Image 1: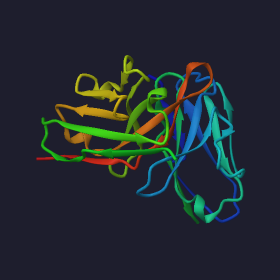
Image 2: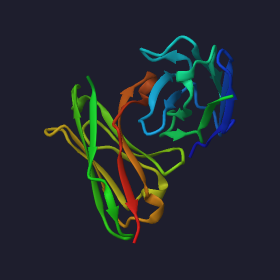
Image 3: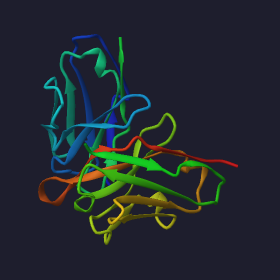
Image 4: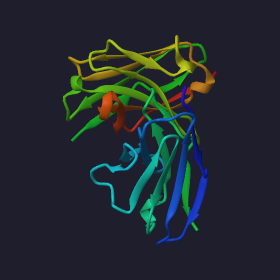
Length: 106
Length: 122
């Protein structure tokens, strides 16, 4: 089974900051990684698929990159509505989520 | 508008069974694979099981193999998760999610329901 190591588990940011979250897979996942946002008490919402393709409705301040085993997700110019938990998901071989990152206001 | 509505959650004793349902609308249900994802209280997301469009192919995470069964009724636009021999560690919110085809026969979760809460406790 593929394992996904996501870091950091939590992050503090001020409005306007740029933040970056990383996910490392236990093997090459061929860019088959998606990123989700989840707010408390709500279902996850897909933001990005296939490493860097923004899903319709995702603001352009969100971005993703990477290849092989190493991937990153960034939010530039953080806004208050971005305070949430974020998860990566590999879908190259079955499905595995990263452990999540909670983004909070500094 | 894509809608996925889970039902059937509740409190159940260890060792007993529970069956979750997910009613789909707003899209052609039999054109999409489907999945269940769970989230234990204050924890992260975990994929549980997936099923192909026709139901002939199913996939499970190791911890639920032999205990949980995913199925679907395309005539009723409904996805199911039969959960047997429940354990306290199965306590979680269970989300129904749609799978969409990505490149090279890979499938990614896109639309999600609001979740059904399952508590396994004596």
